[in-house]
Length: 637
Image 1 (cartoon, rainbow, N blue to C red):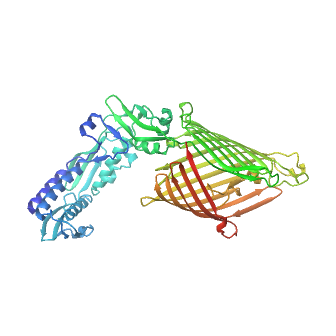
Image 2 (image 1 turned 90 degrees about the horizontal axis):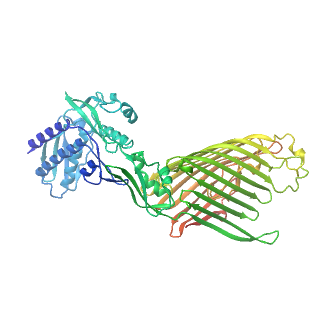
Image 3 (image 1 turned 180 degrees about the vertical axis):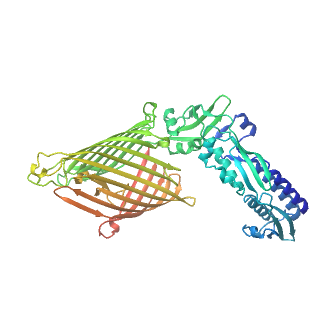
């Protein structure tokens, strides 16, 4: 029996060396359906790549398994042991780590097979057990590694050199080198993936013209592209109110576009990231002899939202009732074109108000361009009024990423000049008008945008322009002596986040927010305002003025559900407030930090979130009573 086992393996494996390697995509249906192209490919389904050599190896190992079963009567479950020896190649055997104690004969049999596979993957293609000796519970197997096979040459065959160069193939890497089958398998997979992503979903590759001479193998690649395929139509089924043009551009798949499997795999994830539609079932690609179509099953999803808090305070000076609060209204996809209208009003102090309006209208006139407009109005008690217009044109990339050009017009005007009429030096506030032109770029690659576990985001903006200091008629003209009324101004900001997955439901977020303002004469009403939930937690909203700041964030998240998580965070910042006017130069800098914890979870009414944070700046001590609690609920309609 042992002699038969030895002869069987040697014959089978020498035969395997002459078999071509190949690759094919097997769908969740019959092979006949695949050949006839009458199949439906579900983008989330598991694809299995098969290789004839692997199948033959499995057949050989099955024969080994059957023979070992006959020898060892492996139908019994019993503690047993394994010892592997090699009379000729003990040094090679010492490099293989294998399990020696087992709870059943079946486990021991599997380990014998794994040892042979390790040999095959390391160029010993004819490795075999010469003999086996056993008693009731122990088995000793004598392993013969055989010869180490090497490549004499692996040539490109009929594969284009440009394609091989792109996937990293070099013939010299396969000249007089040991044959590692995993490496060959990886090469084949790279070739198949390349053609799957370039219009050939049924491509296959194999090794051809295989010649074995004195333990060296010569072969060449043989590629069969099969038919070139396109997506002829994209069909939306369901009650979702969304124009096909938006989905074409958002997914990057348009009627007539070349088949790209990498893009198709991302379709379901991309759809899940849209807040205004939901997929009733996974997208599918149907192949027929006449046409190929991508089918999206989409229903409407409540995505517009309203949230806010209103309060009533008596005015300390007049005694009148004042409304305070923080209100946000966001209208999403009301016209069915993926547009966004966002309106925010805040009045957290009696005489300070903040109004923001943001409009994004993508894919104007079926083009990849979109309009991005922002209006901001900020009134600082009775000190100044700031009005900001920013209009941009986005060039929209796949997945909602974009590059944009924009124009910013910003005006800051003094409201009250009491006690300034006779001053001969400019105060820290001034009437300023700025025109700037800039570029922006946003790119994100996340596994799930709304609650990511891994991936990264980057957003960069930069602009330059001219600032004009306007002379206020209620301030003495002497205050403007030696002040440049027209100067060059520039600013830039960067925001990036990296999500690092840990275990199955944990992730760590590492984030950076930075911004810099350059101006020869800088006034306080030109500075950035930071602090609060979106920048530096543990501090009042927009309570810190800065001409430069950088905030480093470290946040641990435990993911509860798709849109729910617990988190611990720390924010460390450094900022400078450089009001370098000619008459009153002033530089303030500090390194404040905040830390805390919170939870965000999804309910039927919306997403509820609450967090508690403590902040520290300058030499002020921590005080629990000064901690900041941020909470709210976002209601979708």
